[in-house]
Amino acid sequence: MATIGNLKIKVTAVTKGLQAGLRRAEKSLKKSSRKMRGISQNLAMSVSAPLAAIGGAALKASADLETLETSFGTLTGSTEKAKAIMEDLKDFASRTPFQIQGLAESQKVLMGFGLSIGESRKQLELLGNASQGSSEKLKGLAVVMGQVKGAGKLDAKDTLQFINQGVPIIQLLSDTLGKSALEIKQLTSQGKIGFEQVSAAMQMANEEGGMFYEGMERQSKTLNGVFSTLKDNLTLALAEIGNNISETFDLKGFGDKLIAKIKVITETFKNLSPEQKRTAIRMAAIAA
Image (tube, rainbow, N blue to C red):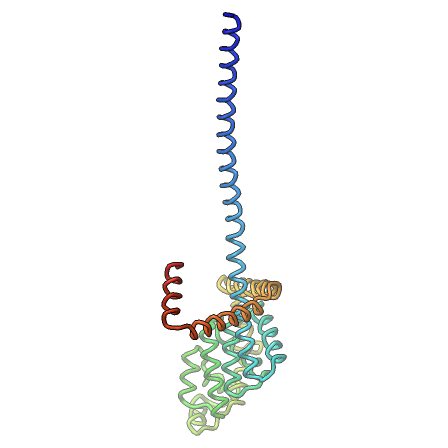
């Protein structure tokens, strides 16, 4: 009996030890499982967060370019012409130190003053070289050139605006027309310097040996120019991604459906009794 008792004690001890070992193993497995879930969640977050950020930036870039294209459609009365303008500006922006938004705004200014698509594009090139890579100067020059086009002549105010934007228009006109600076000023005061003469002076300054010859190309090789070109190419790439996301998930269609549902909810709420409205508002406040 003593032997059997000793055996029972030993078996019990072994069983308890086994149970304790199993409990420790279970705890260890649970702990490992929690760690793995944490690692998995962190990994998912580290992957999904950047993808979400890229997706958001892509959709914004796509929406911004679509807005620009729509504005050109309004100016030209043609979606096909608007698309052609945007494709041209994308190419222009990808090889110059200018952002596509700045180029588009400047071309819209020129077109708004009555220049055709072709004329405005030509002036954009000339003014781009003269603006020394500055989008602000480019738009300023577009405004002045547009004013000259609209008025049909260069006046003293326009002359000062050209000079303030870094373009010595009196000297350029003097070189082009073969007249002294004093004579140019007199002709200007008499309203005898028209858009054609100003455009010709800018054209001559853009030719080889001229003050603004290959101005954009030189600026594009500077550090600021390289970063600007890189930024614009990235924007265009994101916009393309955004277009694909919008088309794949039919975001416009989804938005239209959501707007329709909101309108139904709004109309339904308007038709509720005052008491029902108060109840709905309280419930919404609780849910929030």
